[in-house]
Length: 179
Image 1 (tube, rainbow, N blue to C red):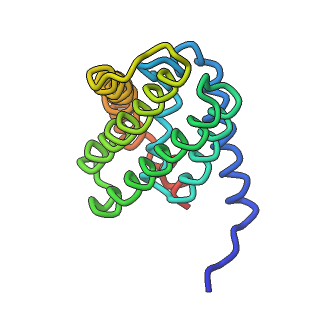
Image 2 (cartoon, rainbow, N blue to C red):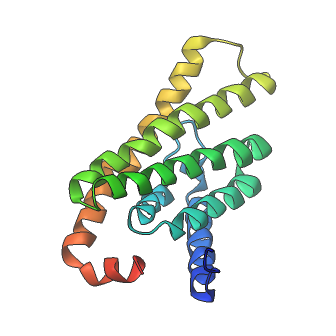
């Protein structure tokens, strides 16, 4: 039988959800564009160190998408699903690579792929529904590419060096978040 979630874990989940949502909201002018430069996405690496953060990151994404996304329900459902799939893949990549720095690079690619496909499709579908775009495969691929590129910039180009730095200089921080 699985142990119940502790109060500490519930607080950690709530804090991560709140931080993700607030960071995304603060930078909303770049967070909800077709390029999706969500600086809060650097936080997805928390799932590399502890699966408990999957819940907080997913919840934070859901909250900010429902409250601020121009695509509300679609982004609330599918954008959140993209985050859940991405951070889960990051966690399983960490297990496969035993938490190594090399695994971090591999893990950083998941949000690029998953969000590129799913969020790009959401933007495309909602743009067609609102009449600002007609059905066009080139537009769909372009939107998917934009979202993927934004994720790649934030998670891989910016996020990986930041996490490497934290891993090499602040191992005590890593030890605390993995408990």
